[in-house]
Length: 123
Image (cartoon, rainbow, N blue to C red; front, top):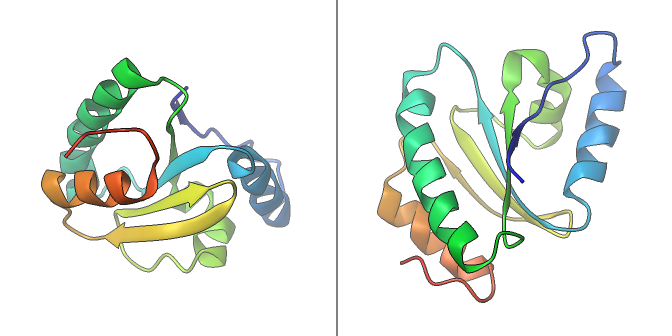
């Protein structure tokens, strides 16, 4: 249930925010704000997939991951006050509960997810 959020170029910026809010409304979503040119984002991606795979073994519905390409979704990034890349925001039922920005260690990411998502043991 992971995805790279592909945004239609003909979608208005305010529609992108509304659409994103619908995507995160009823589940645990880790939104990763990234860009193709971001070296730290590229380094983080394998760690994210490794943790996601471990979570899926226990409960494939526990966490959904959405990658947002900031150059294509500036209104969403602005709405959530993203000022550095990568930025990870964990949403629980549509509400942001924690965020990490910049260079992020695997241990720190695991700890934050563990603190907020029930019934997973990934630390």
